[in-house]
Amino acid sequence: MKTLKYIFAILILSVSFVSCSDDDENTSVEVNPVEGLAMIYEIPAADHTVQIYSEKTALEVGYNEISIRIKDKASDKYVTNAAPTWMPMMHMETMEHSAPHTMLKNDEESTVYKGYIVFQMAGNDTEYWEIALNYTLNGQAVEETLRVSVAQPADGLIKTQVFTGSDNIRYILAYVNPKDPQVAINDLQAVLYKMENMMSFPMVENYKITVDPRMPGMGNHSSPNNEDMIYNAASKTYTGKLSLTMTGYWKVNLKLLNANGDVLKGEDVTESNPESSLYFELEF
Image 1 (cartoon, rainbow, N blue to C red):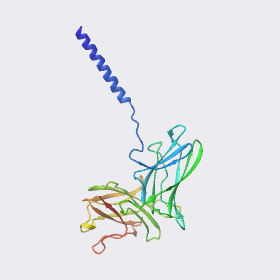
Image 2 (cartoon, rainbow, N blue to C red):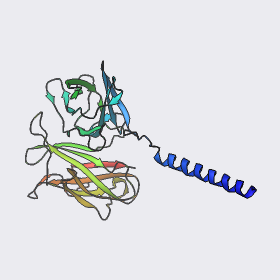
Image 3 (cartoon, rainbow, N blue to C red):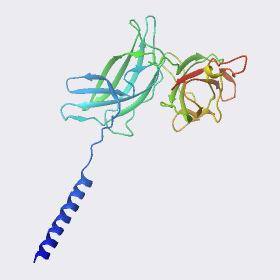
Image 4 (cartoon, rainbow, N blue to C red):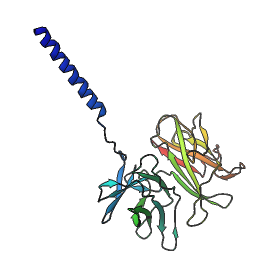
């Protein structure tokens, strides 16, 4: 009889264990789609709020990835069909101009609209950036204008170049990756735009950017196995390889060539010319 009691007890424990295991497997874990991002701005309205996130704690001159969420207060849910558009605008004392930017999309996460803006210059007390947002909420068109602060990068390193090429076209070249450089062969990524007018900055495709990293404080030595950046149609960026053989300060010397191979900006590094006029700076 005792044996039967023991068998019965074991069966109950087994069923309980399986049941608990099934419950654990079926319990859905809520994923925060803006995990690791900083909310840098919030626009309150009567019936909704607009939240603006970035990987950085503040907007800087150069490439800025930005995520936007719109929360409907009535439903307490984030909106998935707002179809937002945006337009960055710099208000200067004598003129106004926009900046290179992508469309806002929510392909990866339905409640998060992502894009990037390349700010060409910092704001100050009298000249400032605004972002105009247009979107749809509950069938109504909404427009918001947000004044934003754009500063020079906190590390003081140059990762954005605005220049006139030998073809008399104004270009904006901005560093994207690696965000966390390593002593290794890193994936190198940048974006390239040209200024058509004060409001239009089309992306430049099918050019080439040569790569020659040097350490000025270490005899200006270079590194092996670098690969020049070429246009990647899938990511709409310029990608290559950046070989970093030690930690410290690096100047990544660049040359911009058009589709015909003509040099539009930059020079070769030689004994008599230790650096190119077109470059990025890294320190890690």
